[in-house]
Amino acid sequence: MTAEQKTVFITGAAAGIGRATALNFARKGFTVGGFDIDEVGLKSLADEIDRLGATAIVGHLNVTDSDEMAQRIGEFANATGGRLDVLINNAGILRAGRFEEMDIGGHLKEIDINAKGVVNGLYAAFPYLRSTPNSVVVNLASASAIYGQAELANYSATKFFIRGITEALDIEWSRYGIRVIAMWPLFVQTAMTQTLKTGTTESLGIRLTAQDIADAIVAATEPSRLRRLIHQVHFPVGSQTKVMAVGSRFSPGWLTRLVNKRLAHS
Image (tube, rainbow, N blue to C red; front, side):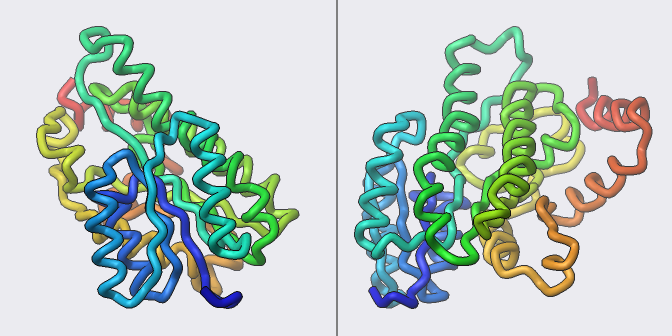
């Protein structure tokens, strides 16, 4: 790769949002780092990126393993001359059901992947982000970080974590020229939601596609002059999320709770 060629590192890249995002950046000429536990999916992703004429660097990554995260990001940076323009913390899982009826091991696994996995990525990537001018971190949050969601309590809590760490690090890391932003989609049509059925999904449906989110991610990494001026940190994706996000700013707490209660049929 040339010194001017931009790079992106994506976790959970083998399928769904991660895969669509990897292909989007490949079409823009980025060197794409795609990492996942699904090595078969990664092989087909690398082949597809190669057909697009871009460079793919793929490999196994369990985001909950801080040592492996540091190793993979280090290997990627070595291959790109230390350049890391965009880090996308996409890997995550979603489990639905009544909190007390779900096993504790599953709850903790969801926290490990959705929250600890992001911390591992941020920590390992920081030196390379700092040395790359105008670098960007994209964290995958969710509309469930607007208000805690019934039947998705633990998942929703992990996305509140993403919201908080994004806001804090965008302030902390601004001194290094690093933007830290979060994407806020509602439910997305991926393998993760194929069997998902909650009161809220019955009320709102599952309308967004992985490509919708991938397109929004690319747009968010290249913000308009207005978005740069106001320093937008959170990026709602889809009309439903945008309405909910705006409404939550002006709605009193009791009303926001009532709306969410009714959407969840609780």
